[in-house]
Length: 524
Image 1 (cartoon, rainbow, N blue to C red):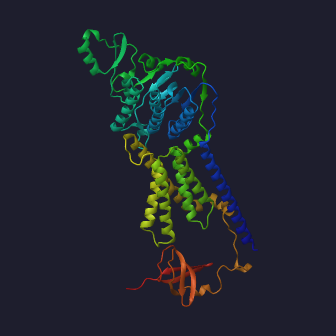
Image 2: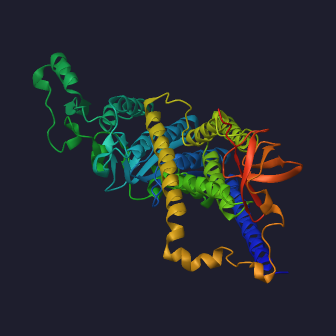
Image 3: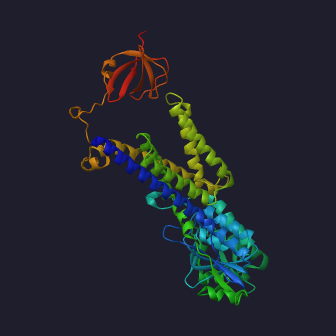
């Protein structure tokens, strides 16, 4: 066998081995994700109080993966007949929709819920604390500052900017209704969201009451102005108009938002009659953390870019290779991770249908329909739509908080498409001209030549005689197909154009075993 043939065989064997390895990694990652459904319980027999952490971990804050974890932990506590659930909160916040989901999960359970603000419960963390029937805080902890903000590229100087009044109103209503349900001071909850709310503290009948300025005037008319003395000592800055409310542990106790101040979890048990109960800590699994990592907006955008880039490279390479496999793995991780993070029921049906329909239309455009038209454009639209809807949990922005989710999805998809074009142009135009590529080219590309003097012949004998001959196509050339020249039927290829059946063509050149033709334009 010639040296070139051995080299090709060796390269082909290496590619197959690489593809096999990538497929093995792909199935391992799929099992990695699916194993999140199997989580052994660490509980023992006897009275139990479950502890669920709501804590920031490096890149992880309150996100959709966190809400999935809370649902799993609450279901485990219900199966184990736990007497109470303690949410151990230490977070700067996160997604509003994830916090609302956690609220709904906690409202659905019949188990007593206690929030232990161990360090801070800011933004979405404050809403989660209000979801619990009792709030306990540790010394030095704080709670509040929950106005919704946007982290979009339009934020000035990279700083978060407040969202619209409509979204602030929605979040304020969520805080108020949640506080009222669990008998927490609703005005304090509202002031954590809306800086326009002004509050005053007034001692009435030995009790410190939290009122608005309008309610103070009403109380003066009802009880007499001399009996209404506004408290001015140790009043939080957030009581003033234009300031968001954030309360320390002592302030929360004073204004009856928190019930107790303790230093550790064990001190909570006797306060609520759970002496002798064992604390069962529910840990978030590595597979749940993997899903949270893969659904992070930055990682999602990277997976999309690499997935589409791999498929673009695969279209330019004959056969199936490493780039296509990597592209499919990245897209599978993108869709699989969002599927595992409690994707909505409508999405589990709609998204696969849209994606498969888009792929089918693209294949029809490439393999059946000449040119690039409605089918190809429709395929791209369906695929992009499936990716976009994967990033959102609501088919329409039915409430104000969902609009931010749609904008974030739009940023990720558009950013990935822009990065795809920039990287593709850079790789196709500049990499082949670089000194690095020239140095490593012989290692990754077959560069050996089969010279005619050594007995090799690239073009079959007699094919050169067809150059300049005219004939007609027997099939659609897209861009390859068959054409007849006199009595000879040959396999031909165009320079990239699509040519319909029975069209006049002419052989313009012969390269190796390729007969290149072009359409003959009829004179008018």
